[in-house]
Image (cartoon, rainbow, N blue to C red; front, side):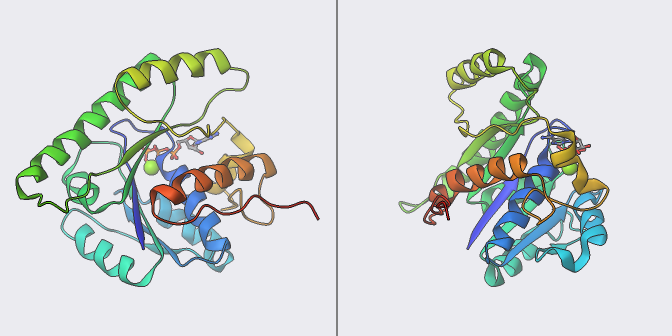
Length: 231
Ligand SMILES: Nc1ncnc2c1ncn2[C@@H]1O[C@H](COP(=O)(O)OP(=O)(O)OP(=O)(O)O)[C@@H](O)[C@H]1O
Ligand SMILES: [Mg+2]
């Protein structure tokens, strides 16, 4: 059982896209996967309405700060992976979901303004960690957070390396895998529900998502999936 939430105080950075792609890919690998839709905009619930049974992911809609903890407990008792899609703001729901998560993923773009918002988000996570310290016994686990660069324009290697250096200076860990801007590969989710790991999905986007899964599995205490072998 692993609980993963996405968090960024900025809107439109790729939180919902990341959650749907990772959840759907893991479900197609055979794991039982649920997404808790804790964003009042309900974008995950809308995706599930479009894709229906063509995705094996269970979606729990209309979750707010008063119900998020119950849903995390219930879903994690019956699913191998539970994702929580949060709104792009610091909220009570964020405060309740983060301490119950094994991994806080922080999708971010690489502009200076986006990085400022990433730092603010990591500060929110740090404050949540701090508020739990008094009650943390000897077996306490640290809330683990990782940034992930998302919506990277093609041919922007130098910008990305610069952003990596800046983020590292702040002590924030970033996943190696970068999600490129692929309007067709990732944008399809919102009009026909097709994710990269769907049989009709975009191959390049799927490679990125599989690489992200390979990176996060060990963090979550799972063995990383083996690389595909040539037939
Ligand atoms: N890698 C990508 N390539 C191209 N378009 C993308 C990519 N990731 C996200 N998008 C598009 O960017 C927009 C915002 O993405 P998304 O909804 O995932 O962000 P969000 O952080 O969940 O936003 P909000 O804060 O509003 O919930 C969407 O239209 C989505 O299709
Ligand atoms: Mg969203």
